[in-house]
Image (tube, rainbow over all chains, first blue to last red; front, side, top):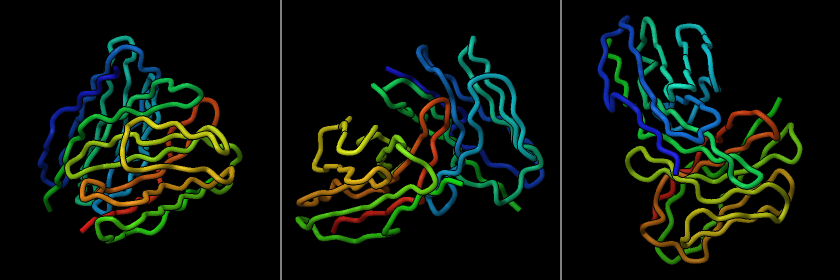
Length: 111
Length: 112
């Protein structure tokens, strides 16, 4: 089955610092999505990124599909960035598409 | 634009009581719909998915069932809740083709 591994499991930063979160995934993954789960539990889509690099403000993501990993960069972190960051890999599920989630990175940004 | 609505936001139910959680999507047709559960901790598990009206596939045998009575409506049900059914339930949709998932705001269910 699909394997998705995230590191580090926990990360504590001072406000203003930069960070890199990593996601490794197994074969047969045909796409990748990064989410931020806020303190209220909602999963916010950050990037849908099968390959290449995308940027959105202070966040950017890079996926190297041939080497089966993806990186999420957070620059100039803010306290509102706190929460759990999930990487999730797509696989075909009949006519639908299943997401297999990693175990997440718990990010805490201190003021 | 497309939006997904999920309710209620929180629910406390006694063991043995029935359950009905509803999810609706607006602004799209024939979406793929999904129910996920997040237990204590971080893992999210796919419970059910649907590619059309009346078409339900189950990924994990359990005390729950799902139905899709209308194109953009997905319902998660149980006849008798167990303590182990407690968790955070998330509905999601994807379009046909190369699209990411969009999740609803979730329902936090506590069975007491």
